[in-house]
Amino acid sequence: MPELPEVETTKRGIAPHVEGQIIREVILQRHDIRIPIPSSILETEGRKVLAVTRRAKYLILTHEGDHHVIIHLGMSGSLRLCSPAEALRKHDHVIWSLSSGKQLRFHDPRRFGIVTHAELLDPLTHALLANSGPEPLDETFHASYLKAALQNLQRPIKPALMDNAIVVGVGNIYASESLFQAGIRPTSRAYRISLPRLTRLVSAIQSVLAHSIEQGGTTLRDFLHADGQPGYFRQELFVYERAGEPCRNCGSTIRKLTQAQRSTYFCPTCQKH
DNA sequence: CGAACCTCCTGCGGGC
DNA sequence: TGCCCGCAGGAGGTTC
Image (cartoon, rainbow, N blue to C red; front, side, top):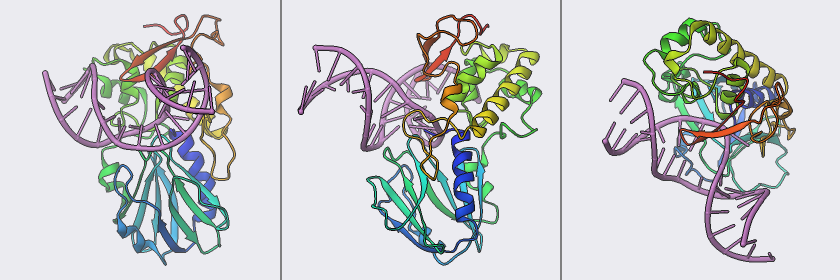
């Protein structure tokens, strides 16, 4: 479900309610998600949450004593704040009771998400994060970096953009949207794209992600903010889930194809090889 | 090494 | 109404 803007929106939603709170209790409704939730997560009970941060599509709750809880929302995960009086929903797998009296709940129907715990000086050294590429909104992500990262890559640019070793946070929606904004065909071989076009692509990725964050992310089916509000970037989408509809730029019919088992959308007129 | 599949899981909408 | 099919914001693992 969530790509970088949705995870960032979630972070901004929960941080003011979680930072500075003491974890009174961690309740594991079920632990058998993609990576089983370790019972050591209970060691965070009684500790204060010092910070909520994001790296790639991971959220990190940093607690006193170098304890970290690392959360990935997978395809269907979400975090929401609620009152303890609110009835548990099906697929509410983890509940944190906070000293404020509120609860934070991790909800994930498909269980592709991750909730794990580690005691580490630097959570970015955790195996889940250590091999991540640059953040797309950082200055380290620029055209010459991308040119080097894509050299010798025969694969199409779209699945390459979704490779977290190349750049993190760009998922299925924003890969299609960014390539549209940059005027590049998703089927173009990654290594053949010129530096000037990669410059446009980097700018497109950054502006699409930044704009989506401003809009609170994209709600397609079930993504909601921590307070239950949807994101409004869906109305800004130019190609994603618009197959058969007219291009908002030129009127051509938006096409859909499958790459690496994922749907890709593009405009055959605006996007060139 | 890269690239193409496969898998995990539940829910929803469309077609019959 | 109900059942079956395909599809869904991810990503790690396997195979060639």
